[in-house]
Length: 181
Length: 432
Image 1: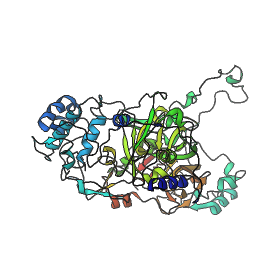
Image 2: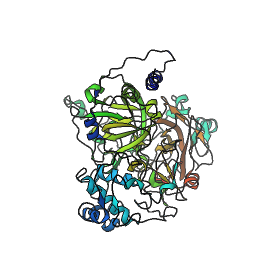
Image 3: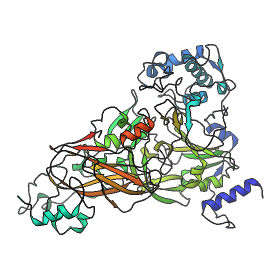
């Protein structure tokens, strides 16, 4: 029996509260096999080590244009003083009585910015930006927060290498250490 | 003047704690005796009926309303609604509405009053079109239709769901001038029926090295959270029914993940995708939000279970006392770490405590209803409740909670709630 088969059997035994030697119970098996193309079309999540990042590229300068058109009305000029979440600044305030949580002061992973903008922004038209536009807006926000330079290119190679300033200030309560860069 | 002997005996023998808290069994034991003499008063001022006996009420002289296809609450209860319905500026669907806890009894929240928290509105999903993909570290990536999920063996369980931001306003410097539900109503409790997730993960042959899953919704926020594989294989459910009927749209129709005891948004609604992974995905809603900023600037991450908590819902802000006399204090208690073991109540701002009665059933990861008789002398005082769960965890005071975690946390507020009862009958939220 392979390791995988052993795991499947063990899972089923666990699932049904049986003891060792119990025959795996029959389940309906109504799932249809998903093709690789189907999976690729559905899978939009980005791991913190960059797995899942698409091709494409963008710089802060390019992102400034996208931001002005698609983001500024809610998040304010240069990521501050908008009606919705502030995105820029706040570094050094987290231990104060009035902490300012922004992409620059709080978010631990740059990959999360790409993942979230692509899946959920702009608020009224999610999934409307191209991947390169998402890289560009991500670069713009990282640049406004002083984390990357204005001409730095964000792509599937460079984005996971960006270390966010607040990365090491999270304490994992769930007992597990993430395998991340 | 000396009170009558029966009342004197009541005060002497049944008082369980200071300032008029009676033994939790008093109503049961004395149901035909001293306590049933009409001293108990409703919280809403009673209006004398226009056509009481000996007149025959009008309703008895005409035919009633016809049958209906789907019932609705009495029109006289139209003010019992979700409240403090707030969205992010410029949006209509990114915000929360809260359960009016002070208007409800028992442990089940009517589905139409279950709290809401959406990150970009309620999607209108046709169940015939909706599909769920399970993929990632699996031998067999699978796509399930809703019709196929409905053929799987199911379980039914009564569980609370609490947003981890519930009561977050209580971290503020001054107590909020809000109703009980507006402050604490991001908790509700339903009977959920659905398919154990482990059955589907087994069919997909999840890899033994996989330690996490990512759950993703089909809403415009594509709301996503990482969940430990241990929880997924334990009691995680793909819920299809709520309180006997198919899920309400605002609760994830046609299928949602349900994780008993865990902070609410992990129970991803409108579930479209489960990706089996080796690491957490570190989504926006488990990094920039729903992490607990401590006073020193560090933040706790993956604080999944909701902590032991209770609140008195009658009386509470939003209701009034209607004069001195006998009342029943009633409230809810719950713990994301198991079952409620006991709830203690104080009518003298925490100097003395009496154990309340817990109404059956008392279930793990469910609201428990507690009750205790209280003889109010009409003087201003402070009521409190303090829950203990079967893991032995006790609700802290607000000062203790803030001393441990600071006041910037936003999430997981679960301290003892103090309600000040004024001699006028008004009930206020106080820090005491």
